[in-house]
Image 1 (tube, rainbow, N blue to C red):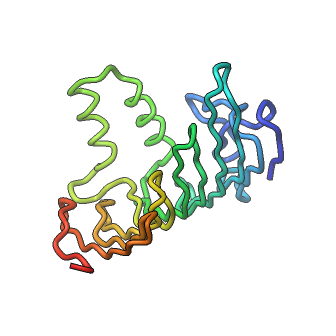
Image 2: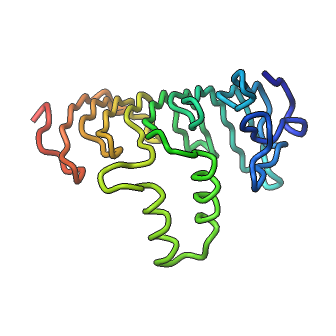
Length: 189
């Protein structure tokens, strides 16, 4: 475990070594947890502040990682100038043969210029086999920017299929969705 301020936070480590290409430190103040092999397997971090013109952002994040993969359960508070998203997230990671290589390729693809090549590469990385996403958010329990509280359950492709929500006026709703996100049944009707 490492406890540090932002400037002294360590780089991302796998098996006690930095990644190639490296993901630098100096980004995450808080606690970073490592397994017995020296690989990061969770964090508790807090960040926040204003820029020179008064815009602010704030984040609190507690996560637990799947062995040699990424986070599978996390609590997160995120606020950018009052635009908030807060909740419990449960993700489903497929056991990628080498998560660290996958992550490096994904980060590299994100930096490509916008266009069809970038879109195709990102799609292939996100869905390495037809019908099998590399990862998908399966559960969200929380609050969105419009102050609607919700429970969303998704299929293995990350598509919401069931939503229970109460909006900021106290109106409750239960939605059943098809694979394309269309509501097929709603309560109350």
